Figure 1: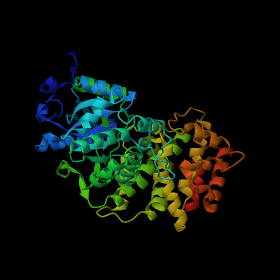
Figure 2: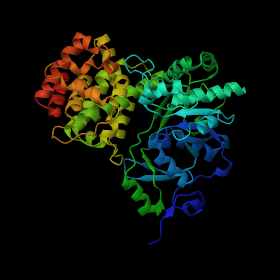
Figure 3: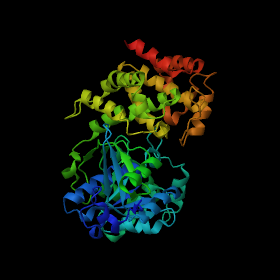
Length: 498
């Protein structure tokens, strides 16, 4: 057997007959984009679009320099450097076919936790036109119930006291923008690529809140000069597994230490609102619109909420993956009914989108048997996700007199999940959430005080005060604690709607 070919720039000619490779001269690419948070999603989405653009047009000024702010980012940085910042994108289709492609749009990576100053200087260079973010909901340091910036965060306190040695994304952004202003350079765009409703508006709000505490004059300049385009991003990207790495080695003789797997579907809807130029991503499928709000709300309330519905209910039942849930008729039916009866009625019309077709497509995507999207990944940091994905829908339906039963059962399931930490078979659940301890403590009071879990105001706000919700939730959570077989409770909700 021949030795595997290591993924490096010099080896691309040997690999080009096996899979798609960059066709542009990577030695000529400059980093016009700095991206904070180089995880699987960034590599399957923004970096993919940029690679496509470079393959089709002269866009050498729009290469990407990745940035990690935590020591946990060291591994991806080391592997990317070892592979000349190349990686393989494995696109898995529902019919079992696979497309493999080497992505070359990332040309550098910097680790900010070791020495912040070189990262700040790189952001402050005139060649940097965009700083983009995939830092997930928790990285924005806002209270999900109030939407206000959390100045109690230890990293934020550190950054305010040590402005030249920041730890948080917003500390780095503020320091870099301060340098650019002092140098008379135009501002860069701050481009959020996260699943937060009005993500650009949120990035602007929290950055200005932070900057005002540090330098009021700089904050005014940021408010005037920096653009924060809202965007809706979408591509299911499960965690890379050892089997994915072995597949490339066995089938292609390629040694890639951290490839990315994803589904074929991809979508990026962006408001055309940039400070200092942008790539022509529309030429490779991105959609620029005046207002992204209807698109992002549709995606958050259907796709992201749908993930959480299946994730929490499926975890308690004993399912392990999203496609495993969809293969179970009860779960597929429950999800579609939630979408039809509770999510869709509170959505505004979306230009160019047939919602029934969109929901059909979601069910098909979730059911892709080759995308083994783990429910533990879906459920991680639920305290940051559910206020935007699910609780907002509950509140709007309460205001309009609509159905809340499907979503309320998910909240009851989350309480049991947070309390017991096991599924109905007694198997342990992997719970990853910054508020895990607080949620667990609140949930444990449920047997004596049914609304105990809802007292976590940072997540639920005043939801417990709504009599209709409190009554529905109390009935469901008590029934669930008496009988943890979640399928029976799902059937009860379905039966009530038939």
